[in-house]
Amino acid sequence: QQLKNDREIVLLAVTRESNALLYASKELKKDREVFLTAVTAHSWWTRFLETFKYASQQLKNDREIVLLAVTRESNALLYASKELKKDREVFLTAVTAHSWWTRFLETFKYASQQLKNDR
Image: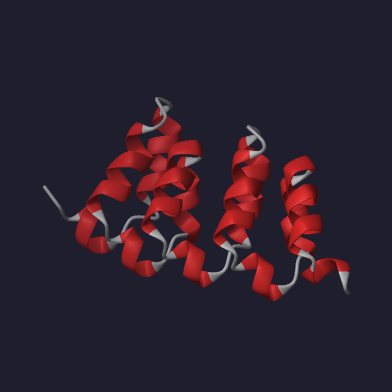
């Protein structure tokens, strides 16, 4: 329990394994630096998406973090806050970050109705 609250240990752990964030204390899961360390330490998109899935609502509503998330994995839009799912730049970043047509279709289903109706 004590280790989960130790910022230095958690930072070291997420540097080695981004999913270590899942075992951090609630407070450290909300820590922006800890989260950014976790998501930038690895290039595997599956690990990144899993880590972003368990981010705090505060981080899922952080525009800079969500832009980073959808740049690395367009399906991260699924876990973004409702507010940021309505954000045109966030959506366009998600759909243009990857060239796969199937990714575009997957990402499009997570967009707000407002963006889906945007011509």
